[in-house]
Length: 384
Ligand SMILES: *Cc1c(COP(=O)(O)O)cnc(C)c1O
Image (cartoon, rainbow, N blue to C red; front, side, top):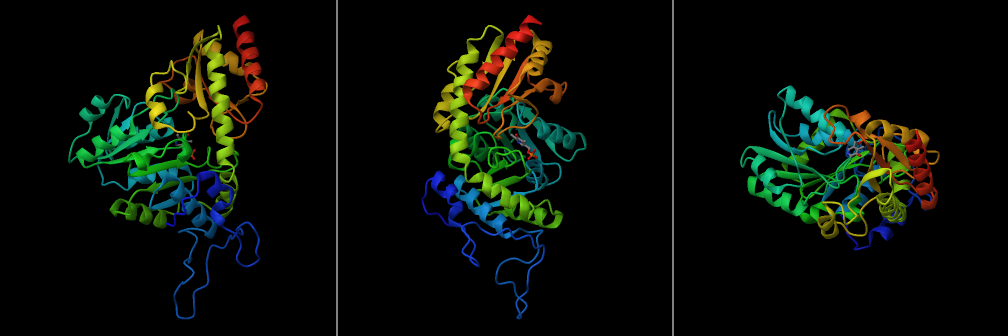
């Protein structure tokens, strides 16, 4: 991949310099063809033959993500889950993997389902405890160590360089779900990870209007070839329209994320002083157990996600979410609209979320309005 040394905001605002060769349009053209012309000598010199491999705009996005993460290659998928599950399915049958107890719940549920069928051997560990991770990883047997930091929904922080060393010593790969920090705040490959995963549905696109996933690799090795084959054969590729929209979303990522980080930090500090709030979980707060590590590992902010634990448990939390007017009661994260969600309701009995936990995805509304709305909802719920 080409590397110009441009800073992320420059790279993204200009879409990496992409434009339409045919017309001079300052944007790359949306090219929806599923099939491409073969040259008279039977070759495909322009590099495209059939859309199950990629779309022209998809290539531009893959190149941008690769440069943002500092990788050697990237691949887009139809969703974050399509990308994440491809990584595990590229491993040999019965492979041992170690994953966090606190992680994106949909993937944890899928992993436990694979384990129940004997497809994978799965150990779930507290990822902020390196000794526990070391004890769970078996040299020669463990193929993959999975990490997410800060991790849904308690935002526990994992030491990626420490995890990379454990994986390396055991002959395993470290794969990191970098959906929440994005490469603007954390670059896992620089810290020794082998693969980075994104649900591009979230911050990278940022407008809650498409599903997309991406994987970036440090090396185009055997595992990467296996992933390429999987995507090619099975077709969980990102469509041309979605790739084009994702490029549009990506161009404003730095300015969106900067505003979301600043607003999240202010909200977290204000809510920590609120009488109806038992605990605020945000790595930017000195009270958060992962704060010192987050300060070392994250650059430019602590992200746009936080959780609050409401006094009075599930009932009080659900009552609070019922009374907001500016926050939107919905799942997902990373969009321009602020979202609020009672996590235990969606995650079910194995959730690490305390019953009173509300997850907040901070959008781009005025932070003063966001705080006032939550304070009113908390006060109204406390009155009953
Ligand atoms: C949403 C999400 C996923 C799954 O991505 P989809 O695009 O919804 O399939 C994976 N990891 C994290 C951290 C997420 O937030």
